[in-house]
Amino acid sequence: MDFTRRQFLKLSGATAATLAVIELGFDDKKAKASAKDFKISQLKPTPTICPYCGVGCGILVYSDGKDVVYTEGDPDNPINEGTLCSKGTTVRQVYTSDKRVETPLYRAPGSAKWEVVDWDWAMNRISEKMKDTRDRTFIQKENGITVNKVESIACMGGAALDNEEVYLLSKLMRAGLGLTYIEHQARI
Image 1 (tube, rainbow, N blue to C red):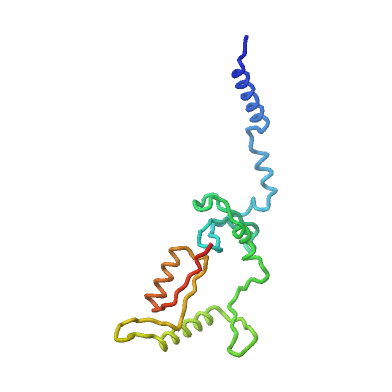
Image 2 (cartoon, rainbow, N blue to C red; image 1 turned 60 degrees about the horizontal axis):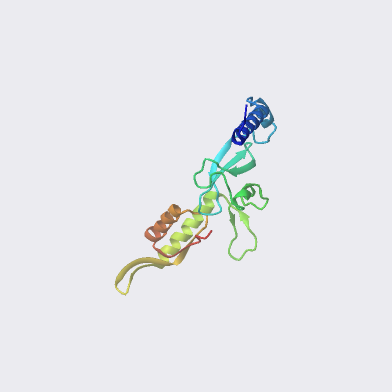
């Protein structure tokens, strides 16, 4: 029986592929058994969005109920398909950093010391200050033209907001509060 070179290469390739499949095996018991050794195999992943920029990359956060154990890119997210940039890979540090501020802090005028306050007090204080400033400085007419604006308060958006959130923020600030000084750090 004569073999052509092409037939020989086909047979060699098929033999190598068969041996590789046999070596890997068809049983996944070994793989499942070794997965139990991983620290995240017993943890439930929680999908979330990366907070660092406006792209909206998906992240899977693995936690044991009280601590974040591991984070990785979400392979089911159509934006990043499981990949993360250098900032996104460090997202676990947002939660685990010892410098993380977990409660509102207030520094009274003239004081050099920060004091811990509760969320209700902080939100009420911010609301009162904004309302007071807006009421005192609201300009309804300028040179006989209705302007309905506030020039004493500015809004600075953050880079973590996506386009839709920035649109809503701008609408709220411009139409809701009458702000004219609105900036957004839309830089990646």
